[in-house]
Length: 196
Image (cartoon, rainbow, N blue to C red):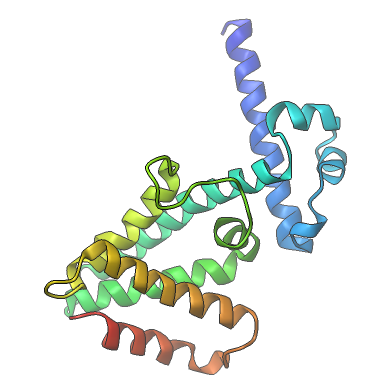
């Protein structure tokens, strides 16, 4: 291995460490606790080292969001793939998708915030949207596009269904919706919004 390759590998390792540490700190104490000073202390590098990787907290949030989008896409695809063999086909896939989305949001609140609540400097719904974000939307579209209904644009339907899931995730986390009705909400969303 050349010196340059070793340096690149070390740099990538430091970047992964910064992102993982920011994510861990945010999950434990919230995003307000994530500062470059705290990150530098936790990873035992100087603040200038952090700034050599990220210009600031905003870019770190963006990196966590991209990582989270890739994880969410994988979780959605895994859930819908497992439901593909079910007898009720599309309904089972859409229900599994909704449950997986809400479960991801509940299990990863800080990552979910980085993806959808905080400014990570990422473009959404544009040509320059980063690939992990496009792929997370594609993971939704793969199951939802088939149940959009006649004359309904699949992408537009996916946006509306996603907005409903986001609303459920956000309101549930804020304690605005009773947790005992969570499953009934998913069933209602699938039964009334998707044409199955």
